[in-house]
Length: 152
Image (cartoon, rainbow, N blue to C red):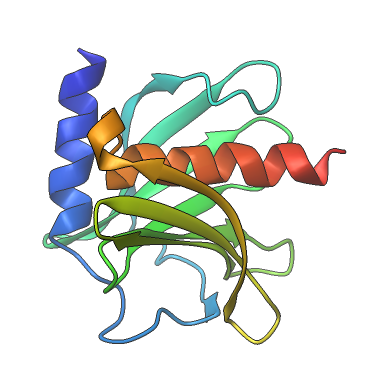
């Protein structure tokens, strides 16, 4: 059943890109009309109770991945033009800030942190397609790595 959820997420993420070029550093709040569709529970090894995965359905043709983990900021997942995703964390002041950039290069997913200039600055991990990784699994690894590094 979890594999079905992952396939659905890949199809939705693959069909939508938030920007034509580099994704912006900041996004505003999601519209009040955004509906949240629960996809499943997954232990991303962040926090004590696991994470909940959702689709944030903005309109009939626009959905973004959405991750909720207790005691951590909510995060949006947006497709980028590099065969990967970007992760945005929800800000206390409102809106979202891009924190992680996942890029696919020749079958390798490279996960970077994003600096204050909205540039990928620090390669933090790689995941290989030949080892069974997908854009989605590499993005979730980046999410886990980011939050666990902040806790150190």
